[in-house]
Length: 193
Image (cartoon, rainbow, N blue to C red):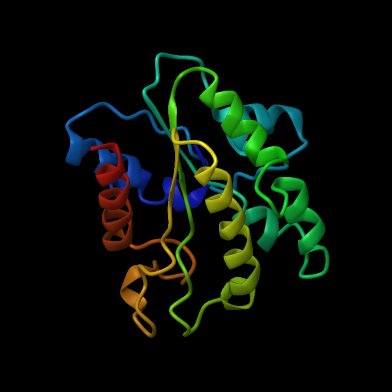
């Protein structure tokens, strides 16, 4: 479940979920959607996956791999209301907000949750460079949420992209390259193993 960070390369069987499936030899159902948000109010497209919480389908899931929040901050706050938007998604202590509520609802089904962070800008040619501090704070809160429940794991990608290395991003310098999708999947698979 999540946004384009997980869904990217899905048309070529190179999305994060495809690689996790290959590594583990276990079936993985990918419900992530390019452009999805934590807050999304349109009912029809929200039900089709633009609202990340609506991507969940009941099942006997052992693990749920999840990300989200980047589009809400990048597109949704206009660099003016990020603190308020972020606190609605997840409080500074990581205990309340839409994201902890979603994770708690998944945990109540018995599934374990892996919340995946975001790629960082390589510091060159990226439109997301200005969101670095907000991304770091958002992920600090996610890590705090995960630390409170042994069935929730936070997979940070903060150290994945070497400074100046464009090979971890697609042409737009926002989304993961196939190389990065593979590296992200390896980190996820290591947690599941």
